Image (cartoon, one colour):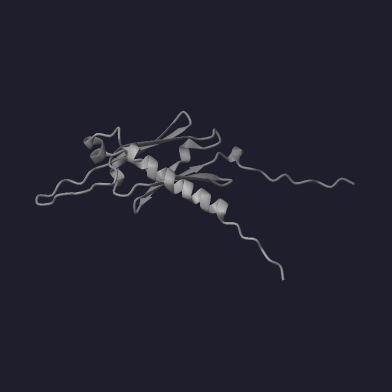
Length: 151
């Protein structure tokens, strides 16, 4: 039977440093904000970018954003997603005590390789998730080269 030494001190130290750092920095993050900034917010949608041999896939989380409030442009190798998440209209008789969700205009830009085919870019939107499928040009796709046996 062997004994395994378990040392959690490095993990505990890293975790504690992360928590303490966030606790100390969070109050200062909004010092420069005005009340208007807190209401309008700075909405920055989370985006995932993945790549296969044939495509680049961009997924953006846009909860509460209507499809017609989003535009996608591709120019000079740069894919740009822009739009706006609007603050819900105030309802009479309702007093909001805290508004933590971000609102306002957003813009995300990504430089894409020259190997993409801009004529075939397609986008879909469902349940607050925007998916942009960016195919690669045929000549950019990897090719398997057969090795001939010579006698």
